[in-house]
Image (tube, rainbow, N blue to C red; front, side, top):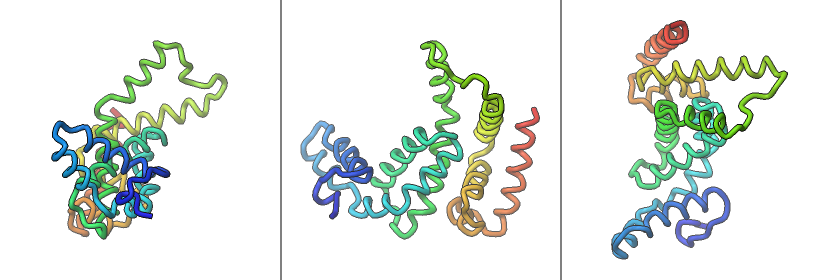
Length: 198
C-alpha cells in the first residue's frame, strides 16, 4: 500500500508522511498547501523502510541514545522527502545527513539543556551503585563532545566509517576521493585524540 498516495498513517513510515503532509497543510494558502502536500516524494515510504534502521544507528552512534536518534531520523527523512536526491543514492545521502544532523544536535547544546532540566526537576541522572556504568557514560560523553569539536568532514568520516560504511561508501557520501578517505580518517582520529587529552 502506498501511504503517500492514500494518506494512511500506519507505522513509522505513515507517521512520517503524515507529519510531512501536516506541515504542508499548515501553510497560509490552500493552493500552496496543495502544492506542498504533493511535493512529498512518492518513494519516501520505500526509502524510509529500507534505510530507517541505518539512519537511526548512525545518529545513535553520535548521540548515544535511541530516543534522540529517532528524532534525528525523523528530521533527516523529512529533509529527504523534500529533496530531489535519487532513491538509488539515498543510502549515502541519508547516512551523511544523519551524522551531520546528530552532530548539530550535539553542538547546539540541546543534550546539556535536557540534563540541566532533569537536575533542576529532581529526576535522578545516574543509577546508584553502578560505578562502571557511570564511568562508561562519562567516557562516552567526552568522546561525543570531542567529536562535536572536530571539523564536519572529519567527524562525518569517523561516524560513517565506525557505523560500518566502507571506505568507498564514505568517499561517496562525503564527496571525497577514495584515496583521501584513509588520510581523512587518520587526521580525524589524531584530532579526536588531541581533543580528548586537552
